Length: 335
Image 1 (cartoon, rainbow, N blue to C red):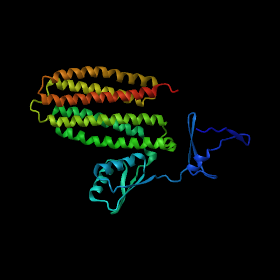
Image 2: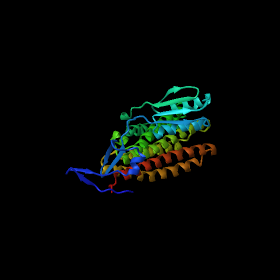
Image 3: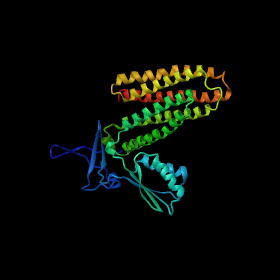
Image 4: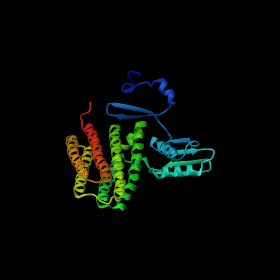
């Protein structure tokens, strides 16, 4: 840490010198322009940049399949607007992995393609991005997935189960968008200013988006289990069916109250809803224990699969509880 004394020049202008080592590292010299971003009692300073697009390159010679797909996704989330993938020769399998990555990311398109190079460009208008809207969309999709997964299970609807599984990709794409926006706010105060949100709020949204992504994963898991249970001759008993529906309803209530608390501006009401969500988890634990007692009377194979369904619904409520905890932290007085 370095300190500087504030001085007055011209009788009314406050001035302060910049650390020379910082200026050299960031290519700031006489005549350079810098940008200031006030955040309550903090003033952030950054060199002014003429380039609005962040470019990056990656040697993919040794990357294939899932490794290559994840590498592209990582560069996207890290904030690169133009991604150049290079090798002596890009194989057909590598191109397939790149296409898989592009299809799994919002706004990313192939800009240029040769035998040695594939260039991807992110085409979203950053001024139109909204981290809150993306999280809201994740909430709606994950909630509908959980509901439809339980319906597919109790009604033995294979088509609906497959549809739930496909929707998991939509939630993943939105989570990557949220992660990209959040990391941009950490890297650049300009990004946070364009969003119009404090970085602490962006952190809360990103943390909650992670919980929603996990809820969607469990909904997809239930859908997969529904497809497996379709081969079980005994089906699901009425006691188990009503128990699963009640458990789902309670889990959804926790998630909805938690998300409402997160988005609410009234801190008192937000705290009230968040506490209701966390207290509701106790009732869910009781439902879970009762359901497991009913499962003991079923065929062992069926009981095992349904036990996994119960676990996924219970975990979904726990993830809602994590969002409620985030909402409580946001509603608490700031130091």
